[in-house]
Length: 116
Image (cartoon, rainbow, N blue to C red; front, side):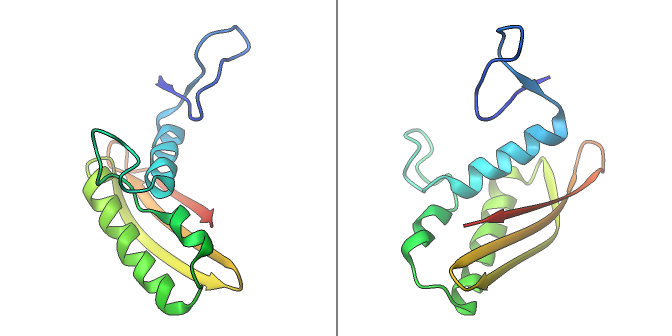
């Protein structure tokens, strides 16, 4: 059992836990939304997607973000997930990340969507 993110207590008053697949999704979310330099002992951890909130949105930005996300996933979570498909789309004021990955431990495939 893994600690659930964000940290909270369960109905018994204990630290809430979660299954492996949900834990991996939580780790991906933390990687995507952590700014480089935000973690003291790992200053290069993160993708910096939150920095894109006030940046201009365009297909070129989406392509650059896709490369950044792919590199971060390979570097920080490459031993946990195998990225099968990654698409970043810029639509109006939203940046949408569609990610399909397989858990390396079980081979189970997951699809998640993140929006900035």
